[in-house]
Image (tube, rainbow, N blue to C red; front, side, top):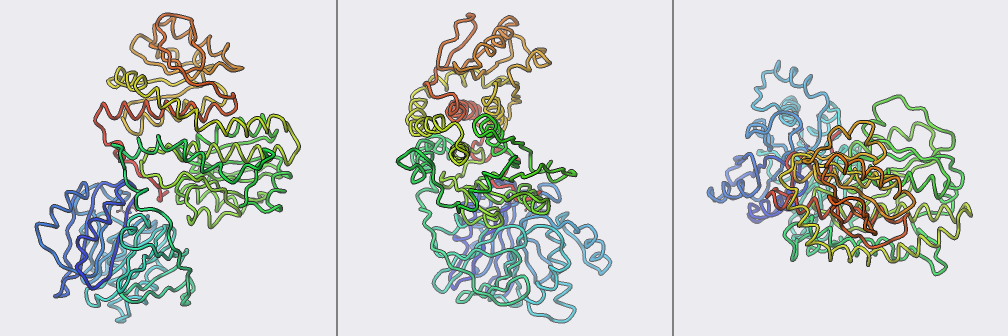
Length: 609
Ligand code: HGA
């Protein structure tokens, strides 16, 4: 979603702003802009619809100079994608960039119009700019006091950075629902919505807490908490390597991240498997572990790919740990009246830890009497981690491709380890638990074997890239994998792809089958294969084009294309079978020439509800 970078220095910051905002492109956006205050105290603003490269060209032509300013990538929520709606927004001497939504912006807009303000955009951000100007001009308040007073009138989750052309020595940063980080330099300081943007300039960061307001000057940073009290926040030294944020030898981040999976799963397993093949999570206290013993029900809430990981775990929780488990999409969980089960434990899953819908669900869950809550997350300092009782981290490393890949397999790995841990705590199916741990150990090498099939998978993709529809089928814990495979295709190649449980075919989707309909069937040779074979026959009889992923050739009909997957234990198999589907979606989008890492309309971390 929207990306913010800001700087206050003694040097010209134009190149810094352009290079840093480019690092936030992965978040997804549709327009970009920049504003600085020049030596004459004029605000110079340049905006355009489209990519940062277009903005860069425009800016470079103008030979700008400024040592205070910011750049922004906008993912539109209020007002169409247009130059007028692109940030920064200005009200006289006040300039603002913002991430999030101001829920009462329509009311404030009417009020401000009555006071004589003219709006040049449809955004909620311009409302902030005019409101700040109004408050400042009423009593000649300082910029800090102006911001403190104005935000009392704003509802919603957001973050923003403000500057004042009449006092161009400082930036004011506000965190109120969306993350912001301050980067500390030598005689210069920075602000960004994500530390990735600043890594080439500093490794020293301060994460703002909810409700914090910071005054950021070149030589000084002061932070005030939500009660307006000046406060010290911890400075952290980032260990994120700048190199890990580059594509290396790969064409796309998504490709790189698919190939990183053996390593990211290994890192997620590391130091958590004890010699006796039991699981140890250093993040969980004995008291927290005990809650899982007490739990009679698990409620998981997530969005997108994380939701699919949660769905797989439902099969595992119920069949292995004997705990009933429900999974719900976060925005649905938050929009209805809920009846909660007795002794239920609440789990959230998120790559970024900033997913607004999931955060909202967590906040609601706290009022409902769950035994406790846990988040499984890839970003350690994120809002979900901070607001949850406990966290199990996935060690997938920074994921840049909007279509999530390595986070998904790392989430599944953590979930399966957690369930194995619960099996031990409950002394249930101990032998199976040990077998799972053993198989997890082999998982990275099995994934590497799939990479050897990439030419075959690319060939299948090249055969199918012109199709308008693709159907994915799976049964049992492979059904969510079919859902995830279809989601990957939709996200990056914009082909309509749907997933069904194989057994559901005859209840409707069979009507779609003809010789033009490709059907990808996940069919490991497991306890469900005989049932899956029936579905394959039903499709074959209607001339559907069948692609079977299995560890054993299914010799049923001639019109079956077979992709051999290495054998792995049935329980672990979902984590393995998603990999060829990720590659398949990647090759389809590649052949179609799509923008794989930044698909249209999508954002990496969805920070608005
Ligand atoms: N509401 C603002 C900012 C949108 C946003 O944060 N997207 O991620 C707008 O529409 O410009």
